[in-house]
Length: 249
Image (cartoon, rainbow, N blue to C red; front, side, top):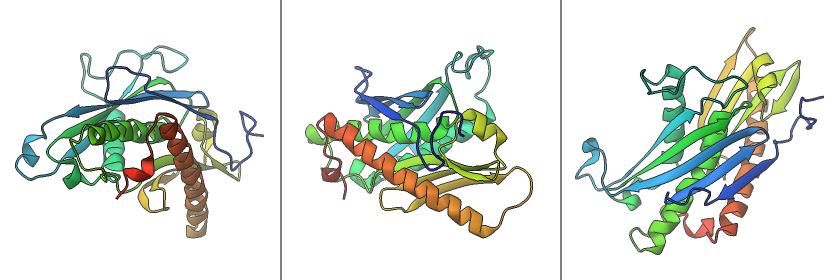
């Protein structure tokens, strides 16, 4: 039995409170079981210096763990008196790559969208929750730019979402909570699109190597999870008056 009573191939319950942050161009409070992430998308009318004059935009991300996102308070926030940890930098780069894969940067024009992902409560899967929720915040910001006729209507390639898969006690499990993640013989994070195209795979065998066929099974299960998450993204955006299909090229 899984810690939260789910079947092996089930996602955690997902809740998206769209427009949670009033100041941001796009925002969602994303909950996957006991993992909670606040994702906001902010539009900047200029691009980083390395893109100036090239006629295309940029999407980037920042990731932060709230000091009380775990059962005990973290020692301090990243960036306050110390540089962001290697883990923080690695995760925010992953989020940025995942979200850029969803956007036609030429259609975006010379502007930058920054997606901030603040983990309020952590029970495994914070990076995958940040990507899935971050896409919703990004889509809301893009819809606002389309409505104001700042950018063309078709600016997205495809919806993007992410989930985890692991081997725990010889069981293949989808969307791991912390207790499962910490005990997994193999842990894999998958970022993919609505059509099943893969953006990124992060996978590690913690002990003995595993056969290729098992990796393929993990990816297949992850893709099924991503497809369900994209459906939930679409429903959440539709509830906010955004038809995702009208943003896709």
